[in-house]
Image 1 (cartoon, rainbow, N blue to C red):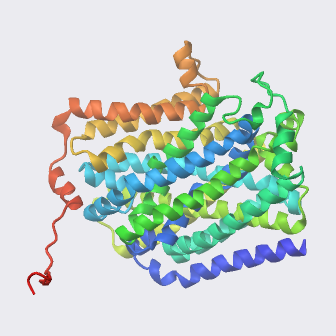
Image 2: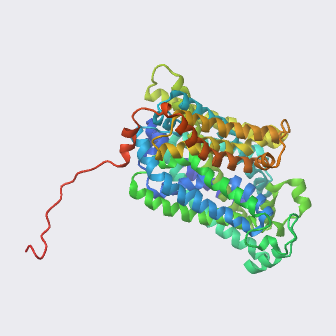
Length: 522
């Protein structure tokens, strides 16, 4: 217990100190929200990775999908690395950084408002962001409850309150830069922690080969193939593909993820950040899902039926030495607090600058915006913590289902409009509006079906709305088709000045060059 408490105190103390040291960089809105657009490749790459991988993935998804797919769940982590990190940085990184600086936009809703010259789009995007980021943030706390109960026998609500208060302190004091520096520290902890935990867990069943051999003897409820949980694609390859797409491609439309590209310092930093972020994702995401794939060696079907998927990973870790359990706690806290701080900044900034700013008749002063930003950071954290505590104690079905659809709703609404907004001059306001509506309506239908308020019939609809993963992927992929079709049919709603906006990608720069004499000329 002394080891665990000491490590936690050191952990929290470092983050508060970082927030205090970064206070000078958060005196302006640009500094508070984007770190002055001067954040290097290592900080940005780790901020991206730690915002991506939270307790939801380590405890929830790794346990659930590891149980469903066995070691084939590792493909989810690799998809996160190569689609969610490598491709995202390569396709979105430079264009996002250049276009947002050219337009002067600090958030994704502000980008929509300026790129398409529509105040209504900005307000709508900010409302969508705020509404669906809150349940997503609340879900972060849920992954911590079982781990803290296992290690400390601490009441879940106390853990939520402490984590919320500490995150609020360093975000309010230090803004984006404090978040980025802490994300780097948290990322290092995650890298070391996940490797140590994998080695320790596999060691309990005779190492890697012994664990695979034991896993191959477990029968599947959905497949008659022997040893399917130790196979290349697992018992449900199609479902595995759906999970890979939602958790990987989905990041392209999440405001808190894309926002990292706004702040990076220059083009060279983007190239380095791409490599760093991909390697980080391979180790952390690949490691989490690989570890989860062995969950059936430590749990029975009866345990999972009673306690749920969130109990799988804690059960795997319960037999580890105290020092490793302490490392796991710090690892999960790191993952959760980094993602929480990123979500808080994304939501508070869009509510302050885009929603309230869009409704104001007069432009607010810098000081007024800064005060409001800090107030909404606190409000957002308080609301998320209350929702998490209510959900954990009362098991409110609506909240649980809303958490499940939040990722799909955000990505379904924003991915296609944002991607086409960066690359295609002919995308229109009507096309973007249709994309927003389609993504949100699709996921609201899924919510109503999950709550058993609505039913659908027919093989196609039943497949699309099988669960929030299927409908989330459908919303994203269908929107990629719908937005350009509607844009081609509604050319009159194309905003003015698009050519000038896209000139920022190919500006010609003239430089003086010295004449160099060749051997022949000499």
